[in-house]
Length: 558
Image 1 (tube, rainbow, N blue to C red):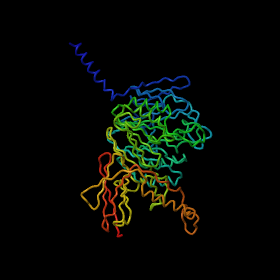
Image 2: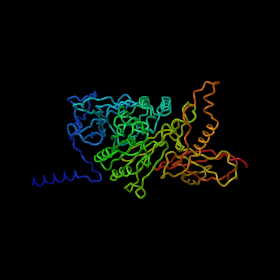
Image 3: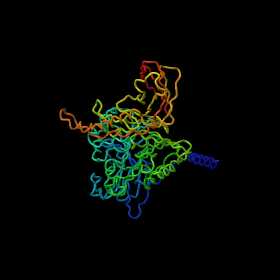
Image 4: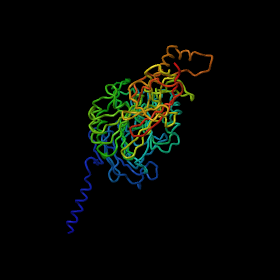
């Protein structure tokens, strides 16, 4: 009887351990041995109980934490120990696990890595990187602190602050950062690359500004964050690494696995500014190894700078397919980028792209904090009116995660949260003058799943609007204005005027308008009585939420 009871218990336990393959995740070994030409790095991940960032004898190790050399991944054993091979140009880092937090420095940058650069950086670098780090330490230990985390959390996402001068950093600090001071509902923030605009000495003032928000801040490397003097792609991130750590890494909050990839492939030529979007083989290997540790029902968020949707010079289609191959077993995925200075939601469908799942893959290209590179006339706060070229006001995004689900919102800088669209109609419509008068709505966070309708003067009948792909009419007017300024040689006259004490009108002209992916139109005609009429617009987003906006229409006599 005891035999059969024991056998039943053993079979029950075995069945309990065999979870469905759709939700399985592998447990990696704690040690990978070094081969010829490599060194063996060893250490511990531990609970830093006294928060002195040193492993004391009484402090316990933490099991099951992923540690990587940028390609290989191990998971700590019961004592928190790990072992990895490293080259003479390596960044060793842990993957922040759920319910634990890494230390942050004075700029609230997570400290989860160790730079092993015994040779330092090349002598020709204009922007310095890591000085020679010396021999590999006997132990590389990573402290963690317990964190009471939730599966329901919100983050803030910045696209391209991209300052080219300290004055641009001031614009960024005043226009963006100050709005987020004292927020208590944000878990962390992330900047999606182009942290600076080529001048890597601006990393520090940008970080000092962002630190005032007071939350952990992650970063993505952009094409304007690379060291152009690097002789190859791998070394182009050296200056970035000396400030932020690895350019390809991962971390976990709740049931969400954030995988950050450096998708800016720098040309193998010192001094070149050429690049291509894609991933190196070692980066693909890291992503594949890490995905092997992720439960299939969790949410995967791939964060990059160059949009996944751009091909050719911007992003290699072959690399897009490789990434989709790695994600094919995960039903919950999202990818985020920036780079293009427009806001766009792109969906990859199984029947028309290389995406291999029945549910579409959502790629979000976040709008930029810098708008159109901090260009445009100054507003009442002496900050440029820097609308993006698709008609989206500059700003930032919030993403709220709950389990494997998420909701994305856009916040226009300097405007209330309910400013979600701009409504355009001609001023002074002549009654009965024409058959066509366009009502145009730019629903900033809209996409192919959005539905827009309108009514005039409170009519009971809502009329549907048609999504169109064309330039935003308001930004076209701004562009025409700048063309006129240029023809008048306005900048030259402004800077040459000595009769008034004015700062130089610096910066560039506004860029050319581009087609917007979140524009809707309706023909309201001109058959309206003379006077004022109220236009009400209702926008329903991909999550089923409804937003409203109002606009006055003036009709005059013929």
